[in-house]
Length: 246
Image (tube, rainbow, N blue to C red; front, side):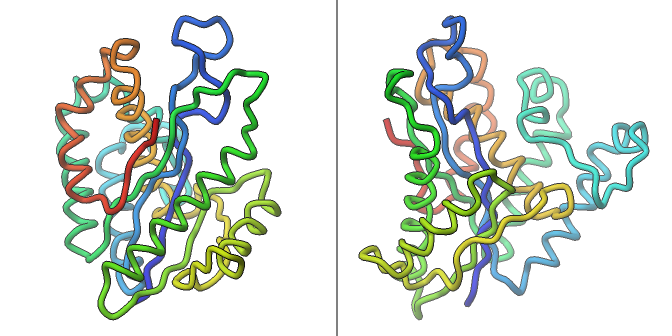
């Protein structure tokens, strides 16, 4: 089997001191999250997600006057405390999303870490490269060690201004000492508004970003407890080799 992994960023790549800090207050975590699907099921899933998006956000799509095939809503804007509290449809859709991924033979995935370095020591590009290589390692290990026979995967990322360096890091992971043999090619980058699969990854990333802040700084993000209540257990039943490090 060949999988395609669709990953997007969650949290914030910059330094974090505290939620009350006047400058470094965005998020205590950063990482990549999304979904991994068998290549044979990608079109099936994309059509399903497109239809559900059109149902769930019909008012906003019609208001904006953009064809829904290229209309997107960012996961960080969708998964807010207010939306989860107010809209039962969003809560039901989220559970259906994880059920659909599982039913198609795929899985959710996320990997990240706390951003605890002092601002003067923080290197956002190095952090992204580290998280990318960790993501490749974990998905590669799943394909190599958890699948019998061994599976393969391709990796799609949202567009990033460090494209050249990220592809280089992935190639090093494939052909250097890491020898990530299950990754077929270095990652390719896509425009999220043109790919339903990447939009789904972004929605999962938005949710994981809320959960990550609650997991790693619960006293600073008490309102995010609602995401744990409704979604944490379901996400982790769908996820493979996932986690956020301290």
